[in-house]
Length: 452
Image (tube, rainbow, N blue to C red):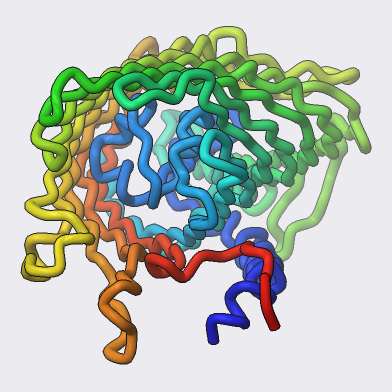
């Protein structure tokens, strides 16, 4: 079995990546938020459940057994010959409320497959595949207009952007008490987003209903740079500072767009007129830069508290096409988050009970989102908690072959939006689940065989 891990691990990982690619492309359609109809949809932060359940405040953190994609400088924390493999997913449950009614939605999707490989004691690399944005909504509203009667407005959309990335982190300074590392992520973004808007007059079969449909293919590149500084003050006290800057992206886009009128005849749509049509309308979509900064303090080597601030100038978001096209406008966003984690004992303590090796996590976050309706900026807040459950080694493993793998689970509960000014309020519960897999201690991978 040990021979398999050393020689065939890369093939197994490649198979996993291909399998996840298929799942990922189909997972684009599982978004359920009405707010995902604006811009490129809901953004995925790429965190593992371990960091999501700390409010997402991760830019100042680094772990040898977890991949922190939000700060690529953290990749240098991996231990030589001990790669990390992560697969994550979420289940989201929404309760939607507005002045006209309420409803419930739910969806489950895979959210990440990532691999981290330590190159040496100062450098690590990581690559993976995950959703970048998700669009998924189906909204219908009927209003009674004076002199007209009932008017039905419907909005449907699905799709999103995927992200495949390659990153590296390197220790510039690697001493017993001080560590300074830098890193980068290079990402390729790609995907399709479909949106349809309709206005119908259900009481009049001869009325001219209207439809606007868009299908947009996008691809582009994004660079992210990270910095991480750790200092040990005493054996029981240390602190860290972290920051990352994403350059954003200028997506190359091709859009097919149709705007026309139709009538309903015996429940069959009959097209009447084409008001606008553009096939393969070339253009660009600008994603603005993203900046994060944070700090963390660790006590007694088992209790850590962290905080983070993030901002992104979405007011510069722009959809620029050769032919005029309907687009959305956004506003600058910012967020604050904080989290803590506590592990009574570590995995190397052979006398500790199992519950003492569990990592307990808690988090909070508050965001001024880039969405704005009727001069009201949409706000979001959430509280989260989670557990890191060590995977026990097999009963046949020797004591020195301790397991470093972990199952990460947690829940994030909160709300987005409000019912005032004709808005929709989302009360959400998001369940995070994932697994972080590492070789057992002393069962190192990618080691050259010295004997047959």
